[in-house]
Amino acid sequence: MGDPVKRSVAEHQRAVLAALEPLPARAVPLGGAGGAVLAADVHSRTPIPLFDNSAMDGYAVRRADLVGAGPDRPVTLPVIADLPAGTSERPDVGPGTVARIMTGAPMPPGADAVVPVEDTDAGTTTVTITAEPAEAAHVRRAGDDLAPGELVLRAGTRLTARHLAAAAGAGHGTLTVHPRPRVAVISTGTELVDPGTTPAWGQIPDSNSYLLAQSVTEAGGTPVRIGAVPDDEAEFARLLAEVSPDVDAIVLSGGVSVGAFDVVKAVLAPLPSMWFGPLAMQPGKPQGFGRLADGTVVFALPGNPVSVYVSFEVFVRPGLRRLAGDADPLPVLVDGIAEVGWRSPPGREQYMPVVIMRGGAGADRILLVRPSARRGSGSHLVGGLAGADGLARVSADVDEVRAGDTVAVLRGAS
Ligand SMILES: Nc1nc2c(c(=O)[nH]1)N[C@H]1C(S)=C(S)[C@@H](COP(=O)(O)OP(=O)(O)OC[C@H]3O[C@@H](n4cnc5c(N)ncnc54)[C@H](O)[C@@H]3O)O[C@H]1N2
Ligand code: MOO
Image (tube, rainbow, N blue to C red):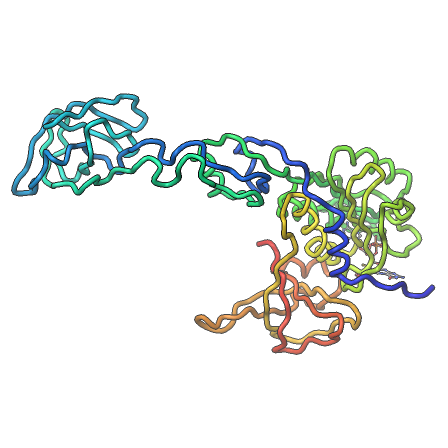
């Protein structure tokens, strides 16, 4: 049995992204749109602000009545109305009168400036004013921020808090977005038990389904964590058929190598819509990707926990981001300096879980990295994952990283 030709990481990333496209757009209420990618440009329905209004708690005045007013020349005028924010009143402020006004209340007709309450005696029937307002002082003009029809948000924006605020202000109660992908997570392996229960001899806790479900959430998807299932082909095939109609993608772990009980490969490899093969990668060598007969996307990851973490960051997260509508979903790597050296397998692009620290001073600050697991790169070292702030990528043609070498660093979620 010879070693099959291995696909490179970049080739597999390309294959994954080429097979996926954004989920069909739909309108969702603003409250549920956070994190989703906008599918269409959003324009303002109204001017922002909607109407001229006061920027201060104080008095809406006619400037002409207050020419020369100051601490030594107080001017006393009658207060003809009281205008809180939200008022529907539109009293005429005639010459020689003022209206008490609160921040956000519409400017009444006739008034052309606002005097803050601090420059008055705060009277409610008459008020004594001790300052001359500048032209249009403390008046927020309709349309100052945006005119009706102006572009507020561009298609392709991943909606964060500030985007939702701008959309709300522009009069939108729903937005057209690519929905978050619903993603089932299934761990395969007869040896797996629920975390927290006492494993019998030969058993271990299922860590992968927790890693993957949380990773799906952090990638902007909605996880459906099925948990661990035993290596039983009929049972596994039945579960896939049951789960797939309800989700956009399924992420599996385990059972993709060359073992005698590799259930994922046994059930899925016969499908022409699935690809299985080794990648020139460490960890994460055995992988599968494709679609079930009903079209549901499947990522079949190797079982080792570090391989799962790496495979998610390098292939699954970009794939889910593509489904979610991201135009450019591949991770951005930054340069870091290896604080210590380590070995890398020749011919395989290595992704080493690393602790990221800051070194240097001032504007010259750099990222320093060192392996997070005591024993380095083993794909079973789930404990060391806890300290991994990211992954250091080492090219396939490098077999040793020396202290001081520059490495590419993919930062993890924090
Ligand atoms: N003869 C060969 N053996 C192996 C090869 C190979 O090329 N030839 N590749 C090795 C590599 S590399 C990897 S990675 C693993 C991948 O194997 P599988 O995907 O079939 O995964 P399993 O055998 O099911 O599990 C591997 C390992 O991970 C543990 N595991 C599985 N699921 C979980 C889980 N949910 N939570 C925690 N730990 C899990 C499992 O107990 C095994 O220890 O194959 C190598 N072998
Ligand atoms: O590729 Mo495996 O994921 O090294 O451990």
